[in-house]
Length: 175
Image: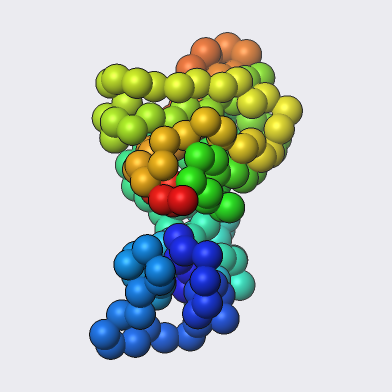
């Protein structure tokens, strides 16, 4: 459990939803399952999709979605692979921090670009940042109380802009 507010009872210590839903000072629901970051998978290992018992549920879901929607970018034997898992944390009124994992060998990733936009289709207002060599980035100068969509594009030596990750979203806080 987590929420986008800064008061208790928010965060992973919550174990169940209440009815009616508790609200924070800004009337936003405190008890909201954002992406299951505090829940773990308790099933059999799935070797084709590197899912193991004890993995975070949000990462398992991201891997399944990428595998189902773009299996070529998930192929663990390919030189070009997508960013399989990433998380959005520390969402504030004008910034948010993104964490990700770059696929290892045999992937030949030479460039990673973080894209974010208020447009879920990424056709307008796309902001890009080359983040090669990093595994976290804080996006700053965001608008308050605004929904942003985030994705990654990877490039390999032989295939520029070869794979795009799934898209996730977050909403900045109102100060």
